[in-house]
Image (cartoon, rainbow, N blue to C red; front, side, top):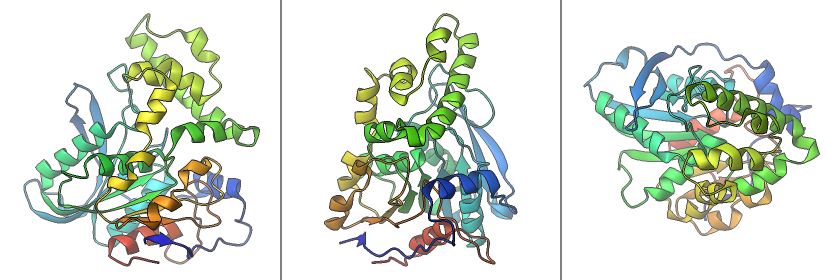
Amino acid sequence: MPLIEKSSYRPPVLFRDAHLQTMYPYAFRFVRGVRYRRERIRTPDGDFLDLDWCDGSSARPGRVHENLVVVSHGLEANTRWSYIRGMVRAFFRAGFDVLAWNYRGCSGHDNLAFGSYHAGVTQDLETVLVHADRRHRYRNIVLVGFSLGANLTLKYLGEKADNLDPRIKRAVTFSAPLDLESCSRVLSQPANRVYMDKFLRSLRGKVKAKSKRYPGRIDERALKRMRTFREFDDFYTAPAHGFQDAEDYWRRASSIRLLKYIRIPTLLVSAQDDPFLGPECYPVGEAIDHEYFFFEAPRYGGHVGFVSFNRSGLYWSEQRAVDFVRGRIFR
């Protein structure tokens, strides 16, 4: 019964506000001590992905390495964001090689294809894993995902349950939008409008840039009017990636239906006060009877927050992830 009923997370004084938890790391946290080595790889469809390695002096092609952590970021983020750098630093300090990868169009360079990325594009995660294996041949692999990257990671584990690479031993995910439709609904509420507006400004800008490479395929006036994820996903995400409409995309890309198939120890942590998640994103029932899927819902933490102040500089989420991967499973 891997339901962690009592979370150990205790927020600092004044950090019992969901929006402060969500915005503070983005605006005020600076993670030092992470040195990336960038590598660009080609995808099977002729596009590219930019990977950022943090593996120190061990990065010699062909050598058998011990442990790799692959980190997947959230919507419109990248490997430079503080929550990614914080997790990379935590695992690197713990002796792991770490690979943080940027989704198509998120590394600071426009991708080549008309499509880009979305919450269910597990093919790109597979491409990253296959490349890492060819380059370094790791004995043990761990997957870590945040927000959209958490959904992506969980979906991948569910899809691959019967033929998952046996070297993928554990996974840790945070703030996963397990049910995309419910998250779209929650983010459309007035209290969360600031997040929706920020995401859509960034997404609209990227799609507008594509109109120069693909003239005639983007109605820029219609794009400018987009104010919700439903409108944007109907307009671009769904048709650009082979879905019928937003609802078809949300249904097929959501990982909630695949949790039951996961067959490696996997932790999902989602704060009860997360302003991005709908009630369908808290899989208590799925965890209660699951052998491998652990679910933890701290009372506080916001969306990818879990702020901590201590001498190590680690956030609670980073220490929790390292402990879980080391086999310290909590009840």
